Length: 358
Ligand code: PMP
Image 1 (cartoon, rainbow, N blue to C red):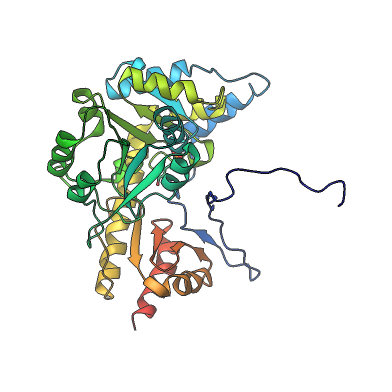
Image 2 (cartoon, rainbow, N blue to C red):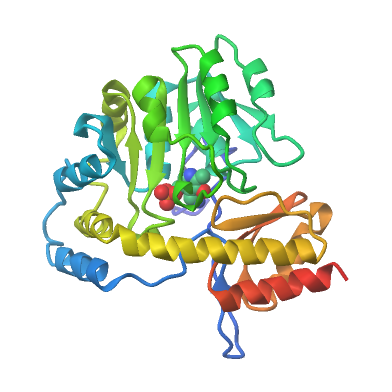
């Protein structure tokens, strides 16, 4: 055997790797678009870019590990004590840390399925078992079935609201009724990555819910509404003991200077950023209406993406959209998730979707 043969024997061979989306490559010089990762299509606001650029000059120094200024800014923004807040390299990192702190082999983690594709990976990495509860036919959480899935081994329930990749948001009445039946020693994670895109009335705010219920933790992110996906900043809001457990698992110095500065600057110009969110919500309404007019059955979307159930046609559909220079996210055999992006990109996708129904 050659000397450079790999001798590494991983114990994670059966863990599926998270597959990132990439914009399609084109040789004909036409623009390409990425509608596969639910990113914000707007470029940075000048003030945010300036703050990040200034922070980049500190690259020879480690960032503030305590993220003191960012935590204080979040504390002021949400009216919660700093002890109830943790920041991480995207809300996905906070989810990993939380699961690492809360579960191990033999434990069960319940979540709806289909939902965020990081959930099964994050759970498997802890050695715990995923209990996936199918969504209802209208792509919503089935809380009766989730309640029935709780056992003494259940340690965590993940509630993705609004749900990625299908779009609907959990209503206040159903969430509060579910929280009433979940045992107090089971953590409920409200993954609110798309919270700022919700327009449906009668929705509970995770930040209000956790104040009354110490077993509820809220995860949010600067990646979507605030347009900082590339800088990796998310935050958790929860009971101080839960937050302390998350912090223990975090990699030291994970959130860079640049990310901290950009997040603080984003909170300072939040009003302008939320105007952009409003425009994306309007665009979402247009895309959903056009799809429905073309005969598609589109679940309600309270996010910056839409979901098309395509079954066995999923991959062929994604390839047809890709041929127009637009990447979307196919889930083979089930459906495709298409982000709301630049108007031109949305139009390219809509043209393919209309043709598909003819
Ligand atoms: N939760 C959900 C439901 C998501 O869709 C995403 C991003 N795709 C995340 C969490 C993670 O976002 P980030 O790590 O960028 O904060």
